Length: 402
Ligand SMILES: *Cc1c(COP(=O)(O)O)cnc(C)c1O
Image 1 (cartoon, rainbow, N blue to C red):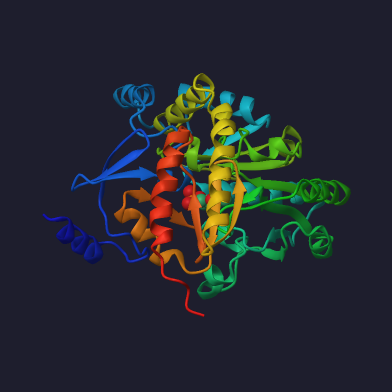
Image 2: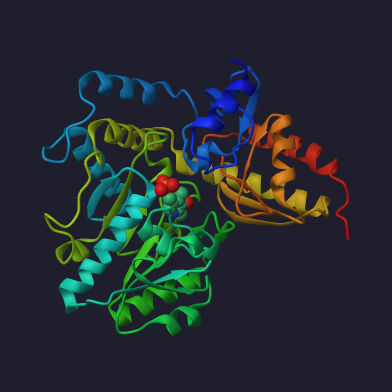
């Protein structure tokens, strides 16, 4: 089949929930991807902030192959060694106390919300739980996660949401305080908003929210699904602010491509929260997925991924700042670490295919923002290569019509 025929086939068989770019990816090597026609792309998307270690890491691949031959799945009715190891390592890097493995980011959010609601139920008999989330947040597509996602467009067609949620503003403490009622059981937020436009929280805001939560007996949930796993220059973004959540979610880079997530909590929350019968998953934490987590965490340490991010990220920032200075179509750079956005004065939908044509994969975050979330192992040379392609495309853009 030609690539064109293959894409036509996909559009007949798959439910049309994505407007996909017109390429069929075939294999990866380091920070490069190849489509089935052999065209090479520098990857600044990493499968949406997932493939942190780059493609074809031998130690990672060998660990997975070994686990496939040993045991892939057990269910949670039994113990398995990889999940025990992975949980222990995850606790160490997150300084949380209890881990529940899931299959995705959204499922981690579901668990985090249920944990907070159960905590309020046990502690004070709360039966009308309310949650405060932030505008422009993104927490996933399942009903609970969608309920706390601050993009009305995503929620509009899907009827009443399944928990009472109000939306406050990022970096506006008064707007959070205003939403607190006697029924509020949690505040949920990303430390750096991803889909909503690469918006980092201010330190004063995070500290303020923590204090508000403590004063009112409210749990603080940090969604670290995208900004976690070293991407912003610490294993979890909150660690740079010194503001610890009560519950935290992680996914995306956690398995570096194997679908796995987790929600974690402090012992204090665990004491009053989910117990046998409250929550479960058939696949979550299976030996294959947690073997990936365990190996990923080992490799983060061995390769000192976090230090590498702190070395490369300032260079990427500097180069993107240079783009903003040089090209009037680029109005702002924002983000943190290797989670960067470039705001354009026009829709990026016309720009991304041009970048792809020239061999660069970048994605969007909202209509006018180019998002750069590369594998965390990229080098300064890779940044230069990316900037070169970006400049070629931006300099060829027509002036914006008034
Ligand atoms: C991607 C994302 C999710 C949802 O994760 P899925 O694995 O797609 O369900 C939740 N929260 C944040 C911050 C994300 O970036």
